[in-house]
Length: 435
Image 1 (cartoon, rainbow, N blue to C red):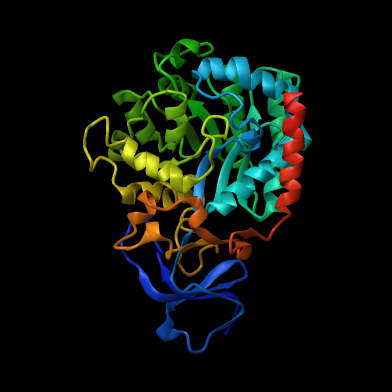
Image 2: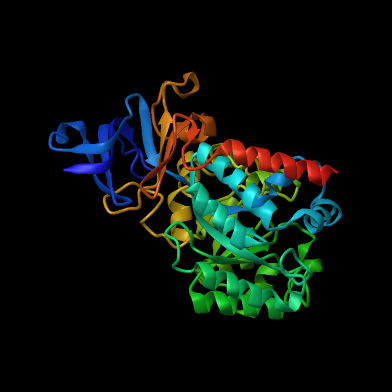
């Protein structure tokens, strides 16, 4: 049988979080799906239109970024070393008001897509304004995405009248739902301190009607409960629970400040958590109770947040920080082991975002989203087990990225679009911002 893509001679990690590896393996891709996988001993009758020799390399599922503001690549390094309230209200919101437009969102989201493709991410859950243009950028770049239209009770880029925020969101969802195999639209309610209970409920009602993911920033700082609009409870989680918006299609982003009752509610409702450790560190928001979240069997996945509050969209870097950070509060080196973190960046994200067993692992019938890592780099030798993938690699070790059965990056060169054009466009936008 002749496949669209045939990968040979590689070390294959089918399911992150396990030590089961296929040594000297091969993998065949047909029509965007994984059609066959096994050892080279079984390959006698197979061939491929495109053959990739992965000798000395590791083949694994593409990583999944569960929370990002892609267009904020324009604001990378613009306002560093500030508290969240100061950073947001005195720097980011004003910069967004003057600079966020369809052109900016398209090109800066495309730059983010390049950064993620080059560092091994194959699926990103994004939330911002003018999200139609972000969706266009992701589709043109060849990266799988859940672009979620931003909803906020203030004049926002693209939605100057807050009374029309739900209407604008519905228009966005309808324009993309079922239209592109790479794009699954979602809704992103900024937070309970920028959105009224009525707005949050209307947005969730729309998300349920369309059966799409619903994202919201939650419990990021200790001051947040006192900032909530028309609070119904003492904590933000309990406020949202009383609003009836917590369920298995809700993804709460950050969740740094949770008490035991909050954790119980999240577990009972099946709510997912997008954990962004580097953003929480940089803004000094706190350290999320990750070991308790895992103990309560709450779905949790890894996200980078935007470049303005992280500076990097490299999930390998995020995994390393995550695994080390959560050993400190309990002074316990086994608190959140590497295998759990690797799952957070892959299979957990797939399940939480609605892809179940179709992404985040390599198996026959799954979507062909995978990456190939150069194991010959000195910092990746010797390779005893997959835990090394959390502590040692960088995104730059990814040699090839395949998304939806298409090679979008090979030998560190993006093939799906002209990266130089994107870089030039973003540099010009940055000059306009400074001016």
